[in-house]
Amino acid sequence: MGTCRYPAEFRADAVALVHSSDRPVSRIAEELGVNAETLRQWVKKAADTAEHSQSSPPAVAAPAQSAKDTEITRLRRQVRELEMERDILRRAAKYFAKDNWCESLQFVEDHRGAFGVKRLCRVLECSRSGFYRWLAGAEARFARQLADAELAEHIHRIHTDSDGTYGSPRVAAELADAGVRVNHKRVERVMRAFGIVGVHLRKKVRTTIPEPSATPVPDLLRRDFTAPEPNTRYVGDITYLPVRDGQFLYLATVLDLCSKRLAGWSIAGHMRTELVTDALKAAALTRGGSLDGAIFHSDNGAQYASKDFAQVCADLGVIRSRGAVGTSADNAAAESFNASLKREILQGRNSWSGPREARLAVFRWVTRYNTRRRHSSIGQISPIAYEQRSITLTTAA
Image 1 (spheres, helix red, strand yellow):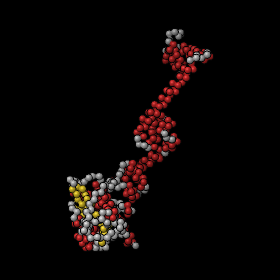
Image 2 (cartoon, rainbow, N blue to C red):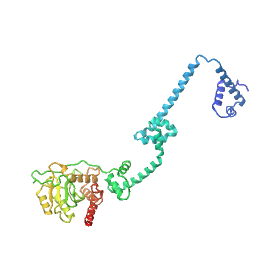
Image 3 (cartoon, rainbow, N blue to C red):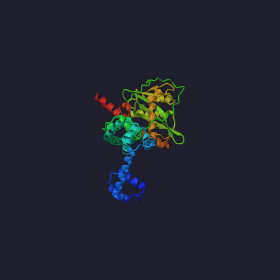
Image 4 (cartoon, rainbow, N blue to C red):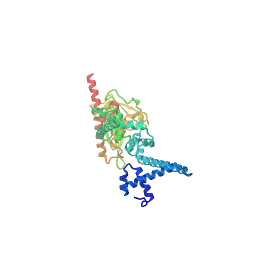
């Protein structure tokens, strides 16, 4: 069959197809609709022509043309590489936003099939050996994630049971009591990872109104807020409880410095002396009707400096102690307690809807505080549990 019926361009494309394919010439010829032998002749003729051109002296312009083609090929290859790097960085944007080395390695793992590990590590500026070490630890990492998720469930239950107030130290103590052996640093990490947050400090509002004419009373504590045993040293203070429409209730407290137990407390809509005397009398009832010989320390507020309060202290056998005027650090233990109380019962709210809600919130919190809430300074147990332990040890001795 002649070749005149096939254009030169068609014959050249057919020969190129044969050279670029591993399939038999007969199959390619069948697809092109030409005789197989004719296609072989075209291939042979093209080879002869190429051999002849190689034996002939090259044209003067050939070297320049070859160098130009080489440069174009190099630039095209460079453009393709840059386009791939651009695609890598676009896909990695959400990983980079986390600014986490492990997330970058996870990106390499997720896209290694599309771009290759070598290229990905070069673009992301991470070590290939580090990636393979990270990959080898995938099974252990997955097991740790499952363990963290299980621990987070325990933590969430404890956090919920504490009305959302417990931070990592108390949660760790609660877990230890339940037989779950876990380091407090891991508890902190898991709480941070799962968004479980304890209650933080609130801004303090001053409620102390000094009494200029008060009879001086010595500071018997001198900022030593400890006690050798329960019912020997107490501190007290007044704090406000915000109610809607700009109104307030006021809470007076009597805190045992040994066990951290709130032995007495009183709530009223005023800050008269009865507020603090009622709290002290309540503490006396808690201790069997007497506080004989116990020290009660307060600030220099008008209520604590009044004659009526001095008389109640004398009736109950209480020894009075007061810090310096204008120095909150001299009564830091009482102020810290009040701050914790309001922080944990308000939990970010500005106020309660009414007096009844405020009273119930305080009552509920105080009950939990004395019976269940853990305190770091007494070994992460509750105040009443600490007192019971003290009684047991004293009896055994």
